[in-house]
Each structure stands twice: as structure tokens, then as C-alpha cells.
Length: 95
Image (cartoon, rainbow, N blue to C red; front, side, top):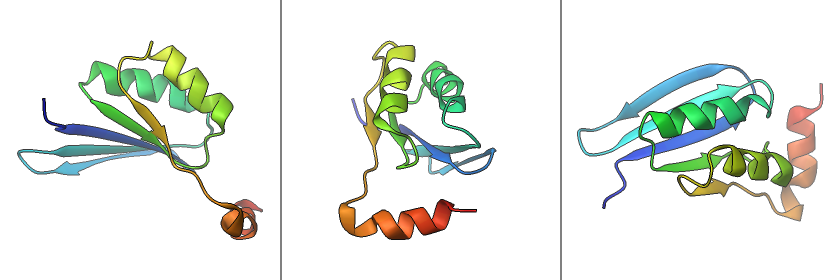
């Protein structure tokens, strides 16, 4: 089976965007809080998304909650940042 439906959930603001070709579709959904990612991931699975990636704004705790909430239906990956990026990431999210 080929990957044809990919989902990415990003923290920051609430939005939805989908793009792709006839062979590959990517849905990106933004959430204003990590806890909203649970419902989004469930809907993505219901919509046929085959793989979900979570942005680095999701902690390992929220990633685990999302994986459990979708009952391991599809693979879930998490973007990670190394120690060299910590200060710059903090600056981006400090208000």
C-alpha cells in the first residue's frame, strides 16, 4: 500500500489546509492548544489519513495521548528539536 494521505498537526493557531496531487494529499491542521490535537487526530483517521506527524510543540505526553486516542490506528511521528535549537524555540513561543 502506498502512502497517499498524510496528516500534520501543528500548534500555534486554529486553521485547516489541504493540498496535493491526484496521487498524494496532505492535510495540515493547526490547533491553539495541544489537547485539541486529540480530536483532530481522530478525525484525520476517520477521513482516511494513513500517517500523522505532530509538530515539536507537542510534548511526549500529548503524543502518547493522541496515539492512545486513535487506538494505534495509524503511525504517529513527532518532530523533535535538538539542544542547539532550545533557546531559539523558546524565543519563538515567549510572549
